[in-house]
Image 1 (cartoon, helix red, strand yellow):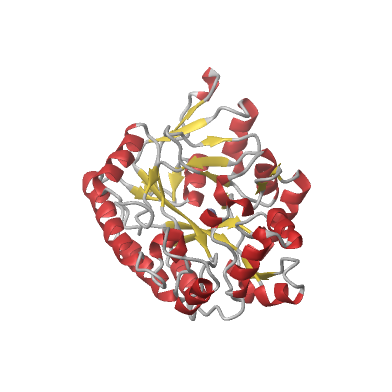
Image 2: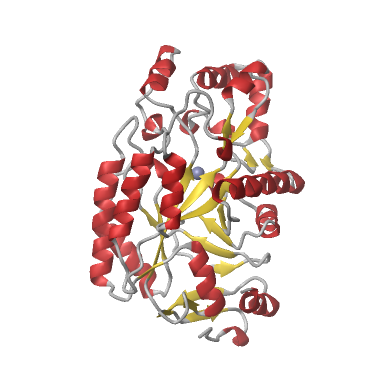
Amino acid sequence: MLNFINRFRRVDGSASTFSFSRSLVVLQSDDWGRIGIRDRGGYEELQASGIQLGEHPYDSYSLETSDDVLAVKDVLKRHRDCTGRSACMVMNFVVANVDFSQSALSGFRRIHLKYLYEGLPGKWLRPGLFEAYRDGIADGVFYPALHGLTHFCHRAVERSLRCADERGQLLQKLWRAETPYIYWRMPWVGYEYCNPGGGFLRKNVQAALICEAAEAFKKVFFTSAVSACAPGYRSNADTHRSWAECGIRVAQNGSGARIAPPHLDEWGLLNLYRTVDFEPAQRAVSVKACVQRAERCFERGLPAVVSIHSINFHSTLKDFRGPTLRALDQFLSALEAKHPDLLYVNDGDLYEIVDSGRLNGSRAPVSVTVRGKTKAMNQRAS
Ligand SMILES: [Zn+2]
């Protein structure tokens, strides 16, 4: 599979970008497996400790339930592309959570983690959740990918715990109620590879975190991660290098003002950029505007890479799920009606298309145009 991609790396290690002959739709969703506020009891505990909740959608961020996951699966399964394949959502998993009781034993001075394959910490209960993930993966409607070991920066959080200052005290309050953090209230927790106080973590520190996360991922899903998205999209060349060394082939990036084409980086990773923000939990979504944005991608031969975070499917503290699924259903129906050549793909499929020019054998041929700095790059893959 690497032959085609290696050919482009040899010719030009920095500027190969790709466009495609068909309308490709990728759904990318972050934060699966990452806990927030446990349930109504956890919410009330936090309020009793003096934290006034309800000011922001992420004050109602909890964790998906098996019913939430099954409801997403049902909607995606109903949507088919021209080859009869269901819509598929890339789910980026955080593969460990804070083990609050172990951390309490150290007087909340250190972070202890509970890996997803060990279950959820403390009083967190989500019966049937892991089976629901796995059922959806087996059905081909979910595609698990790596988000991180944790979402926050260990270094930033441990520093605050040790100082036991105002920040440390807030963390303790939250951890007693089994909530790791609420990002908008405390952006100083940073993102896994990026410490707001000190920039990106050193190469070897990132490499160790990524290696640990990749191993934990395998233990949950019995397969290796092929695609990764850094928490907060905060990644640098060291992150990409470590991903490549752990077998990652696709690097997901956030959206920007400009629609950016997929490209290969110096580590041979296929970089994808989100092009349609579909986040009804955070702001009202116009299905019509999202369709137009997707069409701007198709016109340029670029995949519509739709960003839709897990909070949109939560229902424990607030029903984000119902409105999201109704809007998603309309969005996908509109795309299918207007673009009969549409293919639903995931990150692994895109890598395969770039590599071989087709998807799943000959059922769905896709021409790939490669653009680079040299004339030799202007060739077709199939
Ligand atoms: Zn995230």
